[in-house]
Length: 191
Image (cartoon, rainbow, N blue to C red; front, side):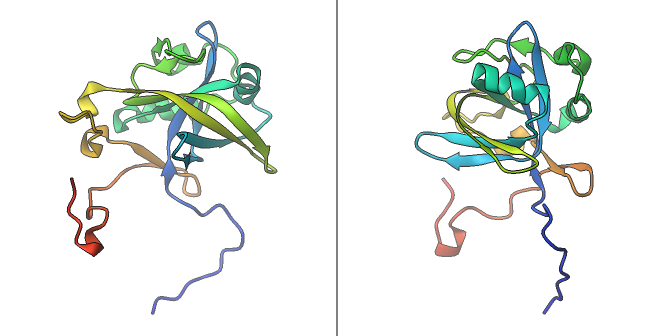
């Protein structure tokens, strides 16, 4: 049996999805790299992002009540890191990160053209947790690059090439190859 070492109460849940959250409007939009994000509800579809309340990006989310979550691919690792380092910068984040704004369909903040998928969200709830505030957003629209879709419109993870963040190690990583299909232990085949 492997021995385990006690680390204390730390955020050792890793890796985590690496997403680019956009707040504001087409005139002046802010981009934050968020490593603490995930699905929180199926019906209605909702996700949660956790960010520091002192940031300008969070102030814009509160002001507009909306944001977009953009899923970058591994070819955007430089842009991801630029967005992670832009805290406090109040000028044009898109120009600084060399990314392209596209208008959303149902919310005010734009989406990122280069992202492989973008989710438009309306704020449903916020919860101050201490160092961070959890923002729960209802997903009202999803944009997916045609290159990641199969013939039926389903997402092909091998084409997505998402990036994960390991905050404790201060690293970006790719997602590994498929190990098995969901339900394989019960003899269920993948669709």
